[in-house]
Image (cartoon, rainbow, N blue to C red; front, side, top):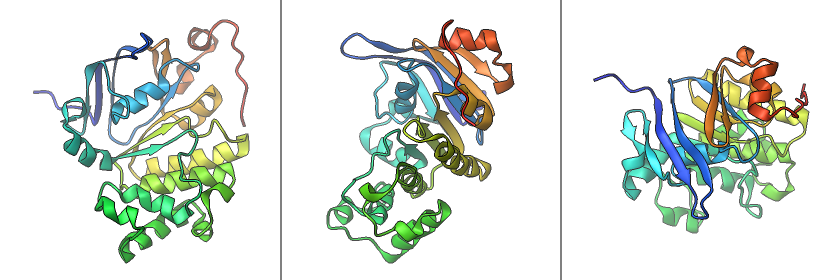
Length: 256
């Protein structure tokens, strides 16, 4: 039997209850350690694809394998254990705004510890130390006791990255992680994600701007109306390909 790739998506389709077909027969493989950027217009299926991989959204049909395990066949308890391996970075940060930065980062360990610990805000010393180490990695350990809603957008996203690192993930899914940020901060955040990839973590990251995708992705998958219309190297996307993905009237806005 042929060995599975680290991540395999086979004939994935998602149709929402209102009849919207977000994904249609999507198939691709990702090898361990790749940095894959997913591009496409708003509504092309990027977020749905990422959320199907960890089953935050349930696929309508198709199969997903992660490190040899069929994600789409797992029972709830098994899925909870598998999600330890998948760090999620969200577009709107998804932090508990009134909680401290440290508490938000510690929540990344919920898959490993009894849930009652988070309810009473009890964390062993080793988990607190782990949280501080991850905050140091993203350069905001000095904000540990600051409320999350007192941080800038870029700082909040770095908290999101530190939280994902608490899971000790093999795979990071980054869903439009810089869409709410200015150009300079966007590069800062993406460089942290790039550094994690260089350490061996596989990354799937959806981005809106092709210029960012070309800078950070070693491979690009483009979606249009829920289907893959391109899968290849960044330099292969010429003007013709760009118009196929984004439409004839689209104009690329460069972010440097």
